[in-house]
Image 1 (tube, helix red, strand yellow):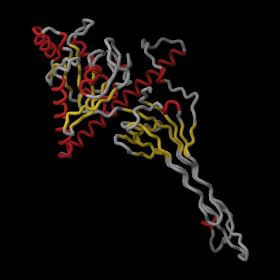
Image 2: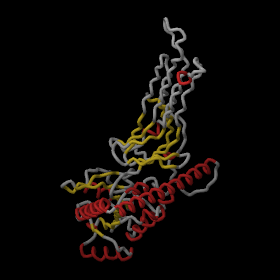
Image 3: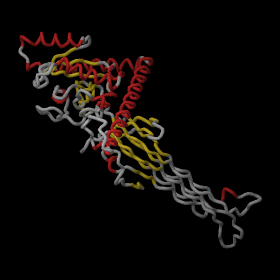
Image 4: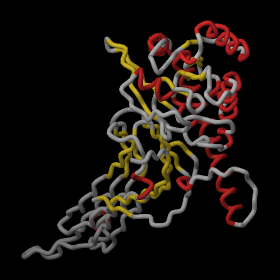
Length: 407
């Protein structure tokens, strides 16, 4: 199944049914009076968080969803039947944004959390409502109200406590395979991971946290190079960033410069994201001779000016991995407990995540506009960009849109 983390859909709530003008017709009851019933209300449209799906791929092919209209009223003061509501299932971690106002309608981060996104129209009134002492035979009835129609964007960001970042081939996929049941692809060439992978790190005794393996970043990612910001935004919901650095790259590159590339891209993409607590993991130490290891690791930390926590690991053999995961578990538990006990700290955390979400969305939209401008320039035969990594998956062409009516 393809991993799709953005989709634009049009939703139309059901229109209300019409009220009718009707008169009671019964033997031996002359001038029975009005008995027109009201129309039924149209169906509402909801989104619901579903833990059985992890992609928005369904909404890339079916882009419009219409709820059914309410039934018209009947005689004998019988109202029309209200239409059923419809529910669109989305993965946990989906944000719903109104494209016309850029308003965030909701953030679905819990199982079965629901959000009303389009309200169905009320039914019209039958002529019974218009009778009076001076108008005992009203022929007036009203039409049902139209349901809301909205163009919405679904944005999926993985919900994880820890995000793994690093250049391609830094060992992120191997690391998450060591600490969880996740089985991302592992190979000796870059960009083996093309979609985010989630793994539950089980420490035992009901202690666990979620880790996200984010596809490898490269220099210029914050400006759209390589995989660009398509997956960088997925670290926006994390509490910690685990920065893996290959201490002995096979291409002979400098591990210090490699680490700086990631730090710079995080800063360019979102200063708030760069301020998240980070842990440096010097990986693949099994590739360095024992007598040279200390000097090399000390050099990397000194050149980076790193004052935070540093671990040394060999993810292929599992050396040092347990120390990292136990440290992360302890830090996350302390943070969770503090959020429960300290309302001020919890509020500050929430405000930080909201600022981060706003920065990520703003940057993502800016990159999308730049991409569209580049596509337009290509069509016009102009060379306004050197970026050769334009991805057709981001095309907003609406051809072939299928309209689905949900009863």
